[in-house]
Length: 205
Image 1 (spheres, rainbow, N blue to C red):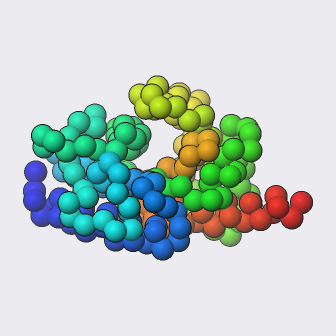
Image 2: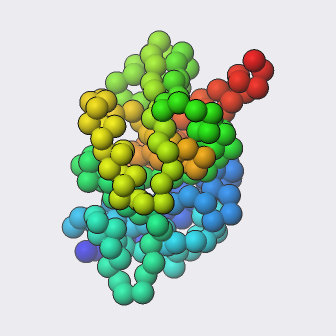
């Protein structure tokens, strides 16, 4: 595995953590960030730690089953969800997980999905060339058994056929991915904006 590839992935993760922190999407020790590496490996944030203050020691390597590649390294408990995305989508190059207020609140309002339609920013997602479109973001019940939660995610993806641009975990947070870090950040920012609008709409109702 190239040390240069890991260094580049680490730099991208640190920059993403700072951006997510600036928008309030990763408070305290919340969230995790990863980048796919060559040779079926993943660079991912270490368990704990504030994502807005990451340094090179805050990123470790794991394999696609979430096992650390260096003795003593402790990945996030949710590493398995990142790996599930990489296993499912060969073109996924980066995964972001955040805990914003709109995501946390809306995911607790019931239902197994949140519908977003008529937003100009829907054009940020592949296959949606105009705002005259709609997506249904899946919402999964939180589960401390990550393997079981990933199995639930896989089953929903199988049922849907065309996978939405991300998913929510009830009372917890959001997962998005993209071909690289800029694409994942754009997807996250678009979804966070639309979910913030949905929250404001519900407050005004």
